[in-house]
Image (cartoon, rainbow, N blue to C red):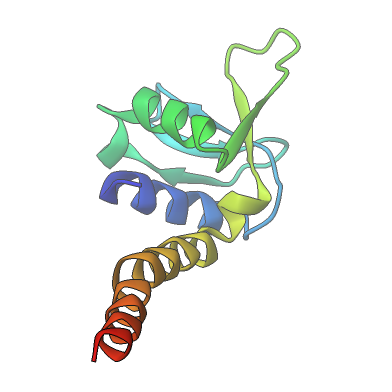
Length: 116
């Protein structure tokens, strides 16, 4: 996940109060707006890349798009993975460390014991 995607996901978690509330991106105001609410957060820092960020977050299953029923905007909501993205990031780092550091050290130790 890129730095911009991580910042945008934090913004989404803040506006939705880390829940499955529906939201959409208003291109005119350059803000993220909650559906059925007046709450909105300025997202102008992401406006030049917003479509790519939303598509990539959806592709990685952090958010999901919802049926719009004739509305001009695409509604989204956070998935479980999007609400707890720090846990999934930590899990990925831990998996990398086990595969790349711990297992080679254990194999080297076993090989050294068997050879000597």
